[in-house]
Length: 614
Image (cartoon, rainbow, N blue to C red; front, top):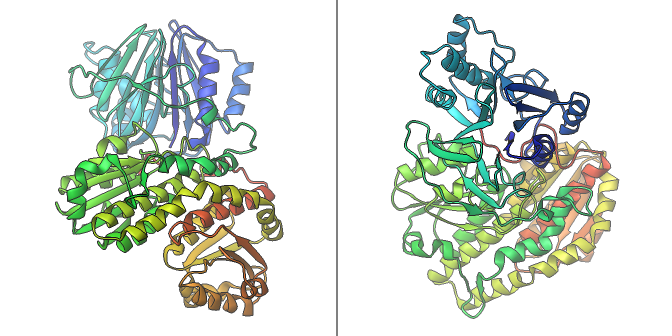
């Protein structure tokens, strides 16, 4: 959730660290800070609020050094303020540390340190760790150098962490470690960087090492070594080349990353499909799972686990896999699944979905399922991510980096992968060639569909301008489009702060209908398929109560036109591709409503892009 960036090398660290923090803003944060080592002098500046405020303060309080650490904090323990911001310094002012994660046993350690006279300045769990390191380094038996003091401290803490630390008594040195919170190590030409993801690194080097849990790095001058936190055993790691460009992580001509990423869907979905469709055989080609097809075909049950938007993609995947593969699918919130006594055995498949590949609850669900003997498959967007390495096999989406906190192109790419997965299993289990070809033909036209939808933005803007003062929104859909309603409501809540709910259309009469009045916009997802007659009746019910009706359909007709205040039409397509089309319309609607309300779209309050703590 928080963001770490650190630098050691021949360049001035300050602009590198500030730019790195700005590239990590999308992860969500409420304060930021920086610490630098200049020989044996350690200096630090930290500030609640935006990185721009930190940058302004640094310009008026000149600090310099040869290496430095920086951090954006998303509050867990302690309110957002200057004192609780990172980096945290020890009692001597000689050790600085940045930390992502949670130290679960911080309270017990804190009480022990307080009994030894340590006075804490902040309310954070992270300060406990830097004070513990200090106690071991300065008040121990003198046998531990700085790196060994950090290791010893980490062996005493329970929880999740990605850390980088430095000490003025051992200048030109950085130490870093990872346990449950992502950390990427960039290896350049006489310069090294640590970051929570690759975005702050790519301007300086394409060569990175993705650290695994339990790994510890020490960088001293122009050399580095990697070992295990619990031993002195040296770990040999392979450099990975980042396939990412600066342009991909910048807004370009767009006012917000979210709008850019909505437009990216003109090619991100087709990029995810590229080379994976076989029209002649009416099937998909998914090389990442080929070795496990027999196990997938013989599975007695499938669990899909995810969080947030990815969970909604999983609900669509359930419809698709059960339709084509005829195997029961259970969709679980990872945060619930990890604590539930679910039925998992060697005949179980777990499909874990995550944009970042670092979601803490989803990783815990994978671990639990592997221990029970299940085959684990990952669907994620980030090559080298923990989920891509921890699962037995998987399928990458090719959405490209997603910076906006509210997921757009990652969601449609996930649904695209699930369509291909369902088709792959279905064709192996007897789905006809005709049905396979029919679905693939629609998938091949999807970039044209997206282009047509984007041409209709002005009509969606009209809806937003007419309804942005609403305090509540209701989204209704049936069958495979019920998850689309959930996703539409989530997008609206995330970026506009309008309360919104998604419901199965038929369930409206079991409660939500009581809320409908002349001020309530109701969005109906109404493709003209076998559910259309039923959903038309639901529209009539809202009309009778004076609600504002916004209908998304693939073919306008007189009945819809007379009942609806607004009709938004998507290109005609396969019923299982329609959820992608309608989701893009809902993304644009949420975006335009947030624009009308003057919201901070790319950095909505209280939200983080990648939830790496429980």
